[in-house]
Length: 279
Image 1 (cartoon, rainbow, N blue to C red):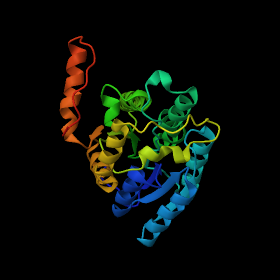
Image 2 (tube, rainbow, N blue to C red):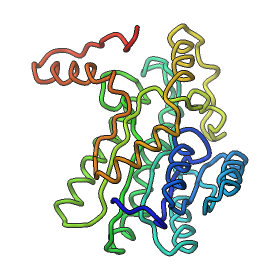
Image 3 (cartoon, rainbow, N blue to C red):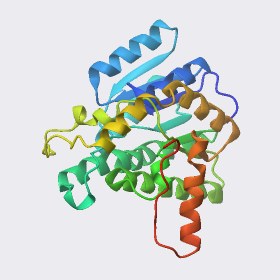
């Protein structure tokens, strides 16, 4: 999908972090952008900033874990612009780093609802219309390098599922002769608010209390603040769409970890972890 001028993009989780970075990069490429987020005040602030910079944008508040919200988002985007050429299923949350057996069912329901079912809802709500348009289109599903590696507990499980789903949808589209293409975004450390996801945790999912402030969590928080800028990730997504590149890896320093996991699988060996890059 090389020509982006005046094309329409929809981004979930667009108020901050990688979603905002993609919105800025898309606007600079001349696209019209529908920004969606569950965090209403931040969404309107980001929308205002982009409009002030000259972007053609439209804001829709939506909770991607709710199928009806995503259907309404699709209806609003199509009513506003008449077509959708790019869909970025980007909204995501982090539910802590406790051992998986200590996580509550509410933890699981919340993170699965956003990180996995949010992508499912996006595909179901938008892809049929994108196919029917019969023109170039692209879906970008935000996973994580955690979705390609061993570990990660709840977060890693949801991101691994997003990778697998994206691979399947890619094959279905190619084998069916349909025009839309798919990319799966697997970033490493990016300067986002992912460790502050609790601010958007719905009341229906009981809060299990503050996360443990152990060294690993604190070190991860500091590392993410020093990570890649969201705008840089957005620009890499633009390049990937132009190249019809499926796997979008932003941090080459994790390559050895991916090779390590693959080798363990092929050799029939038990999972192990390498030390983080730079440790």
